[in-house]
Length: 197
Image 1 (cartoon, one colour):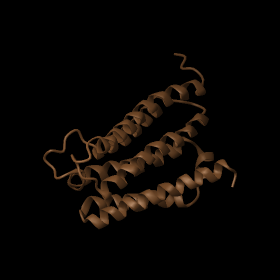
Image 2 (cartoon, rainbow, N blue to C red):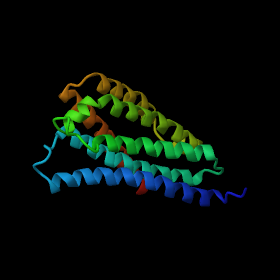
Image 3 (tube, helix red, strand yellow):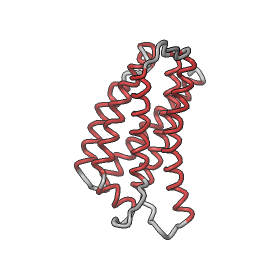
Image 4 (cartoon, one colour):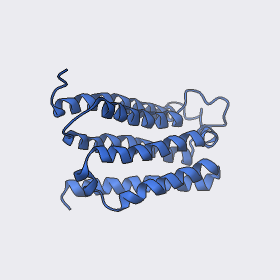
């Protein structure tokens, strides 16, 4: 069966991944819009909004980083399934931030704290999937990443473990801030690389 050139396959995969990532972004933005539409319905929580911002950034970064797949010389159905599964994990993280109904909870922060094991479990899976994703992109992509990438996964997994065990609000906010700061660090690196610095 003729599956086309690697560039044609990449375009196809990118469209399917884009649909799943787009659903995650739409769900998150819809949730944020609900605060504007119904300001008295739910109280805005710093912890919740930090993770909302982090997940929006994560979805955008995932979309950007996946452009590296355009250099894959040979595609397989297994790689395609892996990438869709990775996108689905990110969507589920976004969906956990804005569930369909929180009537049995005191608000989004209460929901997050009580469902934190699901959230941090999925986030830990996303860290591990990122390593596989990086390996799929090849040695050239791996060599462009600095040594701090090797620290990202173990530190991220440790933060996920800590976040899943302890419900302390200050600790939870600290974990969200660390994750967000690290994401901004990668954004700065992307911008620096684009401008040849």
